[in-house]
Length: 172
Image: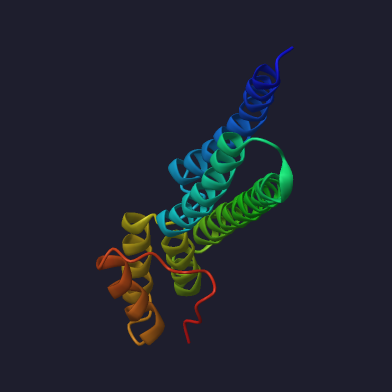
């Protein structure tokens, strides 16, 4: 086989490995953004990192030879894939936990319809899940039952402005 033919086969082989890896990572990011497991900002950061990996991979394929650039592209892609997988898993567990909380607070409200704290926590959980309509309803009911709650008033204003609650932000 001619020297040029070997390089063409090598480049096709690299593309056959690299393109599916990039496609899978892009699919994870997009699917989880559409699933509302990832915020738009988080998905954009992931796509920016993916673009860097794609540029490194493209340079690897065009340049030919694995070399240090190829090794870096492969390692970067593997690390990015592992990070995406772990982050998405963490976000799904976080979302599942919030859904369990919603069920718990709804059960508490079912047992005691005048439980202001349950409505407050239900509204907070809905706000974290980006269910703004449900958050407004629950927080309005919490304020009907306990009109002195500054925390619920702040959360209600945030829900009405359409701003979901970041999980790590302190409320008190």
